[in-house]
Image (cartoon, rainbow, N blue to C red; front, top):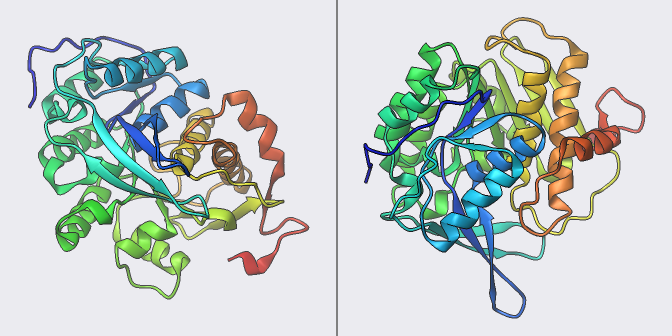
Length: 343
């Protein structure tokens, strides 16, 4: 599906993202479907750009109407396109049903689509042309075994180049025909990560040992080469774990009114990555004892970013100013008012 003649642009992005860009067809109460710009990596790209992080989206986009809308929104948010020329393949689609608690389930249409019309060589070359690039992100549908030849060599090249590799173990088990093969491949991809982000639901899907999500997260971190793992727990907040063994827990001080959770994890990760860059943290951060103040700031920005998102319909990433405004509502396990039974 790759077009080797597609031009790539030189840029000064600090972060590059690789993975799906699609249209979420979100079911409404009246049975109609509302088309929304989406895809976990696409959402992450927009969320990073809105928070002022110079971000390069690596995958091609379609010349169809949906593809033009996806490209336009990225540019409006300030993201850069590694492949500015549209491709003839159609845009990926996801049919999304949201339950009474605001949690989505998905059905994907992704054969012969634009965002998969790339290769490891194309992704690597685009990163090579970004002189200021220090961090790369992928995850979600890019962790499908069908795309192993695209993303695994690219991840290996980024790690070899000394860039921080962030992988979001944002699993979609319901759409993978062979769950065991999918789990094995996800675990393989996570071996390239310096930073892992996962939800409690992701860890359950991986069928990891451990009595609860925290124990499973600890197992996953030790089974990988990553130095940091960010565990999201929905309304119960989030935990940041380091390879050295430190653990930081945080949540909103008051319950947030949830419209839906579409894109919440993507916005969480954007807040986390923005904070990593803001503090200039090295790839090995977490291997040795870390500053509690810095770790708390990472969680504070990540949770504030996710909370803003869940209060909107669809994925509406916050700006940097909105994240800063919300982060004072985040409390930690050592703070007054913390409810220990939240974990």
